Amino acid sequence: MEKLTNGCLVEINETGTLLRYRPGIIICGSGLVHDCGSSRSIGYFLEVLVLLALFAKRPLSITLRGITNDHVDPSIDTWRTVSLPLLRRAAGLDEAAAGSLELKVVRRGARPGGGGEVQLRVPLVRALPLVSMSDEGMVKRVRGIAYSMRVPPQNANRMVDAARGVLNQLLADVYIFTDAAAGPAAGNSPGYGITLVAETTSGCLISAEAAATTGSKDAAGSAAGDEPLVVAEDIGRAAAQLLLDEVARGGVTDGTHQGLLLLLAALGPEEMNQVRLGPLTPYAVHTLRHIRDFLNVQFSMRTEQQSGTIFLSCIGAGLKNINRKVT
Image (tube, rainbow, N blue to C red; front, side):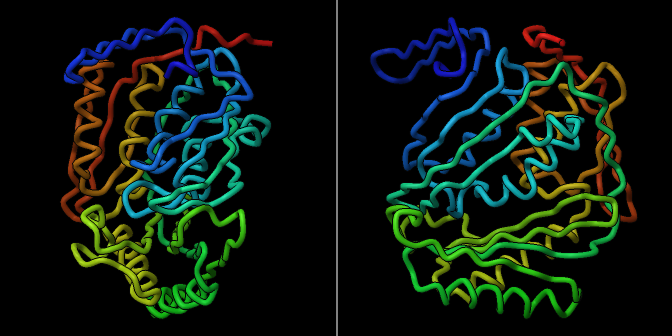
């Protein structure tokens, strides 16, 4: 926050139990570098970073270093293939602006050593358009990427075969790329995983992913429950099953992106913004509470009995970027 803004104040008391933060003006700019550490992955920082940068004074260009893929936060591949396209669609970016919204993977990095690096570029917007996404459509194809770092590249192929073994029973159009990083591009720790994306006839993207975990305590939240995932075939099947579960939940996006889409709707114009989601995740519920407390925007919810999906609508806050110069 100190690197992105000008005039902010951060105070932490001596016991580390009280934080006082005074916001500043969002500046952003180019040539910024930030080390995200090893406690959370880069995907944890991107959600806040991207939304703030849209309303900054200058376009953002920043290099983030740390963990790119793990089992806790959305991976870089999910952000590149699902989150940014969702942002382009919901933010109404034109062709020129959409091209300047870019996430480039320079190096991958797994837990615990990290060592990954990505470059993010975000353009400016004057204001967010009306968000109306209620047609989820039918799944027409599945794409994905299986990655590996500092392990034999056969692990990626084994994950692909296992995932296709599940998905090809339901859909023929399944193609999964492989990315076997080696040398400096592989980061400091071994790891592997797979990200799958289902594209619907209405242009919606639904994602699921699974990554190799260890038997340590931080392995909680892995795709297969409490048991650690270490076998490549198990990871591929787990990701495919998670994708099928997300599709069965319904909605225009998966559970990981519910909070992002709700926030974009709340920041939209003072008109009726409407989205259709599956059963709300705990993260989405907490996001709704934050939206109510900070933006004074409340959603009305209506459940469709037949499909179990939820229609959420709200009058947006009408946030505008007063710093952006219109040419």
